[in-house]
Structures are given as structure tokens and as C-alpha cells.
Image 1 (tube, rainbow, N blue to C red):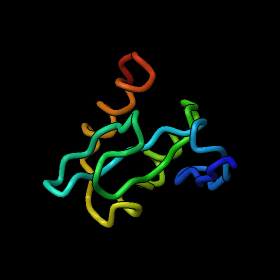
Image 2: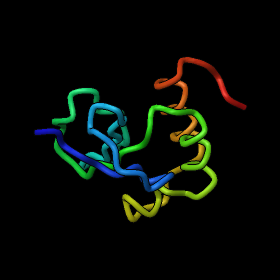
Image 3: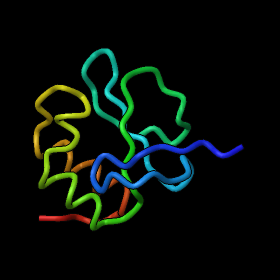
Image 4: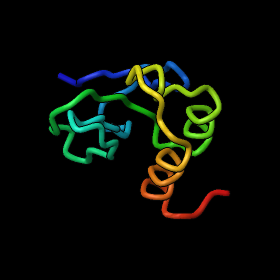
Length: 87
């Protein structure tokens, strides 16, 4: 049985394995959760740069986590996922 999650940027439902989980820890840290098992509030985004750009433009993580997420944190996540600098 496959687990389905929805991308916070494009709103498409996909298999959990096809998405990246970003978690907001209880201490406020935002990090990528490759295991999918870290404690905290999770949000999923497609493994697609266009979706990540949409996530940044729409401030989708701010809504998902009900908190203001600094742009540099989102940029760091993007670099960690896609392995290049975006400016």
C-alpha cells in the first residue's frame, strides 16, 4: 500500500517517496527529513526545482508551519536538496 502526501506548492498528491519532507522541530529548527521519521511538523514538496520556486514565491512553508520562515532558511534547504546555489 503506497502512502500519498500532497505537495504544499503545487497541491498535487504523490507517493511519499517522490516528495521531500521538510520538518519544523519543536525548537524551531527547519530541516530536511530524509528518513521521514523526525519528530515535528512536516510539510512535503516535490523533488522539482519549479515546485520549490513556487514554494518560495507563495510562502507555502510559512502557511504549512504557521510561522515566518526566513528566506535564507528556504534558500539553504533548496541548496541542500538540489546541490547548487540559487541567488
